[in-house]
View (cartoon, rainbow, N blue to C red):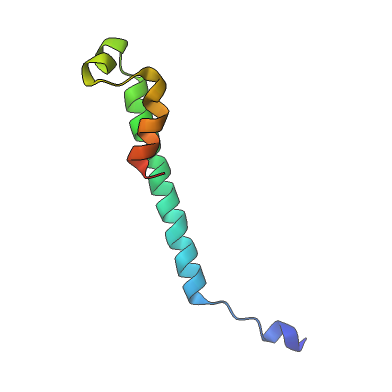
Length: 66
């Protein structure tokens, strides 16, 4: 039983984990926002801004910092 009493939770690890999760969620939200916005555009609108439909995923990833 002594081993169980020696378990301590490092607050720093928990804080870093929370920060990493929040960062990941924020990046995913930004990716989804950019991807959906571009995917909803017509081909003409995409042509006007110089984006090929096949590049939407790459552009969204870059915008989100992946």
